[in-house]
Image (cartoon, rainbow, N blue to C red; front, side):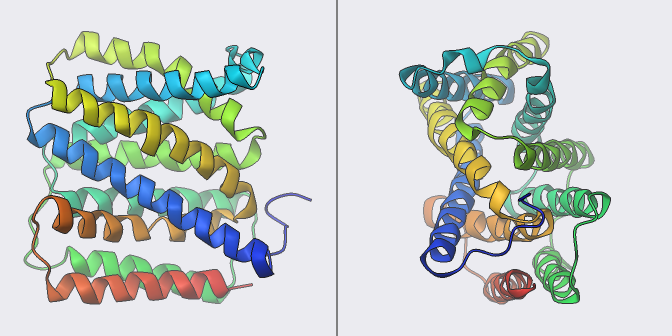
Length: 288
């Protein structure tokens, strides 16, 4: 049975899916916080992206090798779409955060991801119940209102880079839903993205410090490598439209983390927007 036609899991299986999905969303939000912390501390965007790719590839490659599946890391034709889209996401993400505030960057990223994955759902002729469409609309409206009147206008180049990252992540997620063996697939994608990251560093060299290296390693090995491998495990159990809406919680988690770790202020707009986003996600997840 395909992921698109699979019925929603029930009972303990359903609760496990919700828990794993929530854990992945926290990891995604942590990537934004780690990236912003590193760049604000003086790390370079291209060096951060390269270290992130190398550390993710190293840890995932080690796990695959320990399982005796190192042959899965070979550069087969099926690997390259994932390599291209993963590289586009990581490079666009790192360079965009040089100029974008956290909230606006997250809104552009996951708004773009939602559009990409909903387009994928339409092209795949997945059913889109009215309740799921309504939930997605409410969730996106909550994010748009959070960055509405009075918000800082995004830097055009930063916004374009984050849109490119959104396209890369959306396509990468759609590809991941159709592939088996999530750990092997993610490991190969990270491994063969490293040369592309090194090429970007050669064109735009920069420097980083020990703090930036540590943050990049955490972002690569833990919140990216393991987080994305887990996402690949969860994705086949989610419809594309549902996966798109769920990811709209990430900007809210990222902004809450920014308040905790970067001393960003708590505002009434944030609280009300969070309620809209989470309520919209709940509606979408209830759709059958």
